[in-house]
Amino acid sequence: MFFNRMESGPASISDAVHLEVITGLHGTMMPTILAAACQAMVGAITIYETGDMMTAGLTVAGVLVAIVRLVEIFAFRRRLAAPPRLGRAEAVRWERRYIAGTVVTALVLGVFAARSIVLGDALCCVMAVGIGFGFGAGVVARLALRPAAALLDLAAIAAPAAIVSFMQPDLRHVGLGLLILMYVVASFEMVRLSFNASISQITLKRQFEQLARSDPMTGVSNRSVLARDLPVMLSAGMVAVHTLDLDRFKEANDRFGHPAGDALLKQVAGRLKALAGPDDLVIRMGGDEFVLVQRAASDAEAMARRIVQSIGTPYEVDGQVIELGASVGVAVAPDDGRTAEALLSRSDKALYRAKQNRGGYVLASELRMADNATASRQAVEGVAA
Image (cartoon, one colour):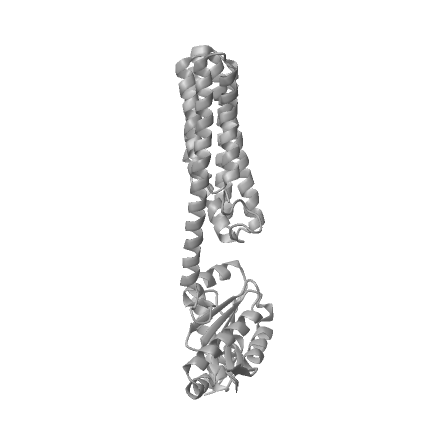
């Protein structure tokens, strides 16, 4: 295949890799600023030497396009920093705007170079064509991960100058036109090679990151994900933290052996993932302790009830039927805490009470109400004394 994977279709690169590519496109403003500055300088010199008003119009157009592109980059960065997270469809729209800006810039620079060839001032021609070559080199470096866009840019910047060169009836201009075409062919080959290599590197990087975030036994997330993602989820709104321990797991592990215990943990993780919504987190904290972070916290008690029921359904491992139970502590933000540390602490306290009750679930809000009632009763008794 000419390209291993390209653009943003369904069978293309993953959403995470695609977003990283688009973020990289908007990662620097310097090429846009330099292209506009170089065109303004060369345009000013050409206008001074030739008085050509078409060059003046092209120079102004190049600067205006650069300003619009800079505003677009600033807007993308603000959007990236604000919730909710950028989705695939919205990311594609930002990408298309960026690519449209580069194509317009390339076309303006291509016509600018072509005009300098027509004017016949050798030094101005060299400078204008040099800006085009420089922009083309930047296209190869920045747009290698968007090969179709890179081809459009290279064609837009090269076609006007090449056409004008071939229209001149002398060997020097024909040679210049051929040189421009060879440059485009070589540039696109570099884009192809860079694209395939870069996509492989980014995908491999994402795979390593995913491995670092996963519990190797069960395949769910590990505790490092909780530390990173829970504060982000809290900033977006109401969440519920369900901390759970497995009841009778140690007895089953001792009786049936560690392989059976490992199989049980995998099945428990699978049941929790089946209960979790698409935006929820399932995390193995270690041993037989799990955490489910529920984004739709309005039905937190119903989720806790489903967890207890699902985990309590018998398991079959190597022909043996094994029964477990679950103790669940539930803390809901913001009532039970506004920080990750507070929520985890209160869900742990609720879990401890659930274990004292020999299973089931306990809401942190119930503990808080009981503590408040105890404090009020003690205050009344103190006044009476």
